[in-house]
Amino acid sequence: MRSLYDALPSHRRGAYAAQASSLEPYVLDAVRAGDVVTVKGSLGTRMGPIVKAMTARFPVVQADD
Image 1: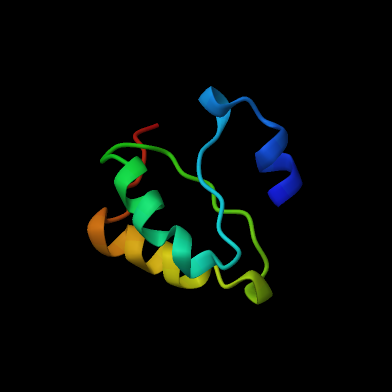
Image 2: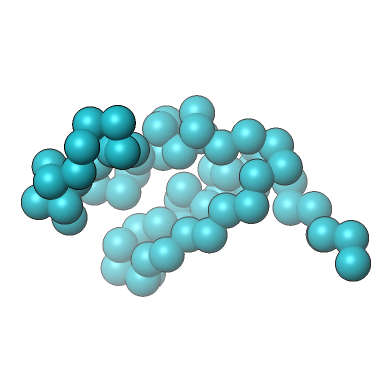
């Protein structure tokens, strides 16, 4: 993923980290109430703590039909 990050123009880059836990502050700063977020990662990539941090700060709300 580092190669992809480096290949992107700087104005298109988000954040890169070797470990998912290092992304938590960036993700929490980037997400706003009302955003729709999809987290893609296996259990091995340790995305669970980031999801927990997001749902602690921004409770899940059901969309109106």
